[in-house]
Amino acid sequence: MSYLAYTDIQTFLETTLTAAEQAVVNQILPGLEAFVDGETGRSWNVEGNITELFDGGSNVFFLTKPKANEVVSVKVDGMAVDADDIYNYGDRVKLDVVVPDGPQVVEIVYKQASSNLPNDLKFALIRWASEIFKSHKEAGKTITRTSSGPISVDFDTKDLPDYMRRILDRYTLPAL
Image 1 (cartoon, rainbow, N blue to C red):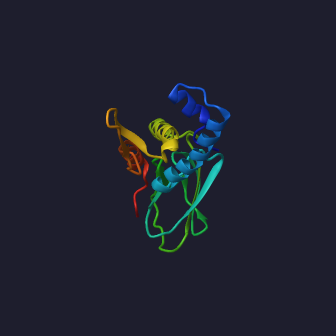
Image 2 (cartoon, rainbow, N blue to C red; image 1 turned 180 degrees about the vertical axis):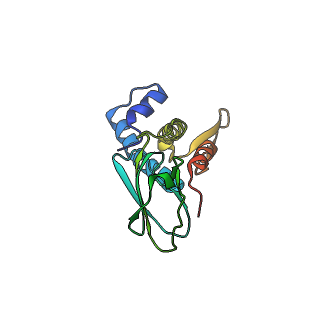
Image 3 (cartoon, helix red, strand yellow; image 1 turned 90 degrees about the vertical axis):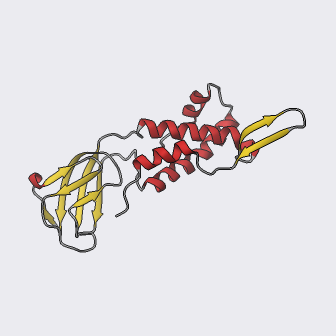
């Protein structure tokens, strides 16, 4: 399921996109969505139960598909963990049991609280996609200054807008 549709960009720009412009936007969106997932180490819009495996040696586990509305089950080395020993913090699960060291010894099954991208991240993504769309005819560079009278045009060649970096930092999972 996509995070955005061309209609989000169309609404933000207060215009009606032609079929060709819709095609351009539809080419931009999957790459931006994959970039957001890669940068944050998470993905949104996942339906149904989500199963994740974690290495042992810790009792706190950061989920890759936030926010966990309900932890369905937790197993450590194939043994079920009692519900009273499971603490759900939405983006991480803490266990009140000793977790032995080892690869993929913890299995957590949970349901996502929302299948929607957080509003601030969605707005930043719409804004960034709109900027890319508006600048695609200028080779993807945003014009930052123009002059008339010996004509001058400056391009912003920054890869990632500052507002996008700040939003992504809010949702990036901590490195373990």
